[in-house]
Image (cartoon, rainbow, N blue to C red; front, side, top):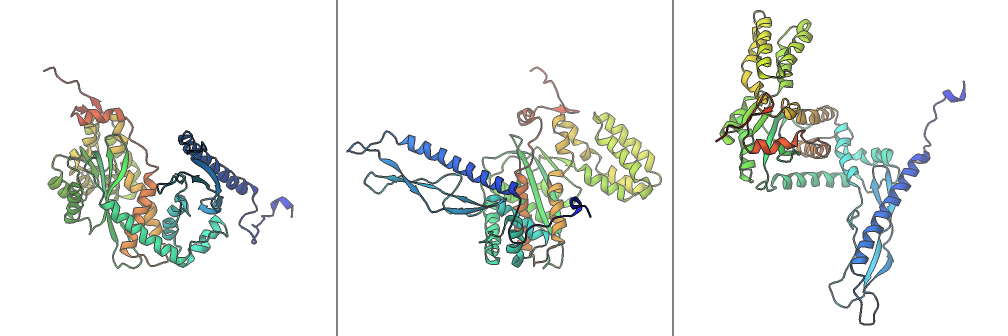
Length: 416
């Protein structure tokens, strides 16, 4: 057999024989050192003019703290933090702690974000050390089963603190709502997590609310929305996007009465197609796309009528699912065209939770409802950092001012 066809297995005696990984790790160490030295130089320069009575400098370099390893996504990286000595008498001493390397940091944030993914992937608590050693190297110590258990408790504490944050200085123009179901291993019934994602006046999307609900009931949604108002969210969002679950819309009209409603086209398309024969679904899906991808509301209305006429005689149940939400499906035409791709669906929630659903099915460890909620929270917060801002951010002040839009275009205001 030719030598180039033989797959070479990794050396079991070490984490990696790949020099490229070592180069990356060494580069990370040097970058950290450079950042720390730059921050130290700023501190030394700030006190360079301060002298003692004998004319010597108040602040001087004083060696290094003991070297420590920080666990990162490419394995452990050794770091050394320089010390400074404040020679001025008194108790109020100047010290140096790099902002990128807090005093007790042992694990980079990327590693902590890896843990909930591993857990939901099907790695039980007792297997974490072995799994992380395979990913980060044999020196991935400090991540024992006890450490993981403490981290899970920390995730819950983070969730509770996040749930109590003040919203009095925030305004959200758009909100997306969905009830996401997955089944924790210890629960007899599927867990329903109620989620709201908001877009603020600067176009930034963020996780706004998240609770363990009960079958998307109006009572559960009302509790969530009232809690947002209690924590300072006084102004009604301009538009809410979600599927046809009646519980959310009932609660929304009670708590945020002026918020307009947009039904999610992804959910609606699936509901309608499920009521049609499989042989017709591709064709019907194309006709549904003709509605919500039309340039104007009038064109969308014509495509809507065509769908009703084409399928209404034989498949009245499918058509009824579409017709009952006709106006709420077309609300987006009264908002800037730049925002349409964001507000026609509840995709910010659906795309993030798609992975959560798959992973909870494969979890080997016992996943209680509380742990399931904490895991989902950590995953959502991790995903939030990668969410794109709204396109057309210059249109957001116009929405706040109450300027009207029709077919995605700003309407000229009549002279007073």
